[in-house]
Length: 332
Length: 252
Ligand SMILES: Nc1ncnc2c1ncn2[C@@H]1O[C@H](COP(=O)(O)OP(=O)(O)O)[C@@H](O)[C@H]1O
Ligand SMILES: [Mg+2]
Image (tube, rainbow over all chains, first blue to last red):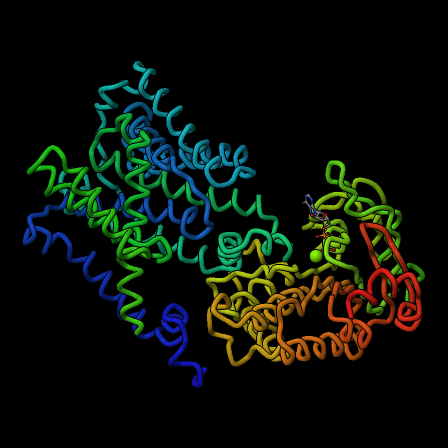
């Protein structure tokens, strides 16, 4: 290695010599997240905005399992997110006032439907895969939109509240305090991305990189490509649905727009803007997107065009996304 | 050795519309044999490989691997039965390091690819096997570089190393020295020789460099316009008037 150190490409160099730096980066990341409610107000934020960053960061990171790690263009990920939101909301409204149950049923609804849908599409590639995934999202959107009695239709699903957590002796009141709820979401987020990291760094996770890099070579190594794309898609849907369930708890509300392709597009923007080749890229993208959206939408109705311009600039000047760019500079 | 041949191909044809890319070719490759396939561009050599490796099904004919019919088996099944191949145009994972490329192949061979975890000892075994393959193919110095940034020759070597990671009983190499200079060609040729002579691999080699072919091959099959023109030892092929007229004469 030593003879090649100077000419080694940055990505490999970062991976080879960067363990202490990676750990330092992780420490900073978790410190920033753990203290977010304290410093968010300094930049005009608030607890619920910080929670929104985590929730949308989680769905973008879930989405990135398919886009950045497996290399497939799924452009309808709002579907599984929205199904998670409705699953959680309907559970709280009609089944039981239990937050864990809401998370469980929401995650199962989006995860299982996404997994079944995945079976139908694993042979599609590129733009066909993208179109079919968008179409599934729109089908879910119209069902939620039209099924007034169950979902509340256009007005969305109301009349449910996240319930306090009962842990044996103690009760944690995530219902009344938005700050306590932030930390609750942070714990779930940490568990979820921990599981995600384990999956992506496993032998299975490496087969996904193989498929992204060269499907033909992957196949001729004996990797059953379709099955692995399906598994990756399924895992991604479960995490996206978990994020959606948290979203319903955050807002005490679920509406059809959580299923709409506009949100799917925003998830793509967050992911690409943050950096789809980096594990944490989508979280950074979500943070930038959510905070900008909050600021700019209070100033102008055209907040999307501002975000659009920023997105264009990022793609043009930092094709690897914000985090990809930072890591490259770091490695030099 | 068992009674059956390592690879037996019977009356194999592939038609693309009106084009008869391969027409009624039969071939038997014994255990431990190194078979070269030669023929001018467009003779159907790669198409022949594509049928053997399961890239697409033949229009007609049968393929047997160690006595077992595999004509309709999927690529995954054929790899599972011990077949590995390289491509005329290198197929690797360009944005991963050489080590990662090989690690994926080693893990696939070890049956770990559906696993969400690997024990410390499994990971160590994978790393050791990866290191061995790096050394075997001369890639140790560039192990941590992105494979897409290596020289053409080293990329070809990395693809061969990935095929070797599968511990194949039958190795198919499609023009491994294509586009290589003198020195790189020599290195690849001596790697193939070692694999054949020392490790006793059964190899089918498509190759355009006649020095490589006549130095390495036990037997040579000559294709022309999809059909088999000749089949024999290097001596027989060199002396064959039809081959001289149709191919060697024009090439040299
Ligand atoms: N997938 C395909 N579809 C249509 N024609 C093909 C295909 N693959 C190969 N051919 C044609 O079959 C003939 C043999 O090609 P090939 O097997 O690549 O020859 P070689 O490897 O001997 O140079 C050529 O005329 C080529 O154009
Ligand atoms: Mg060819």
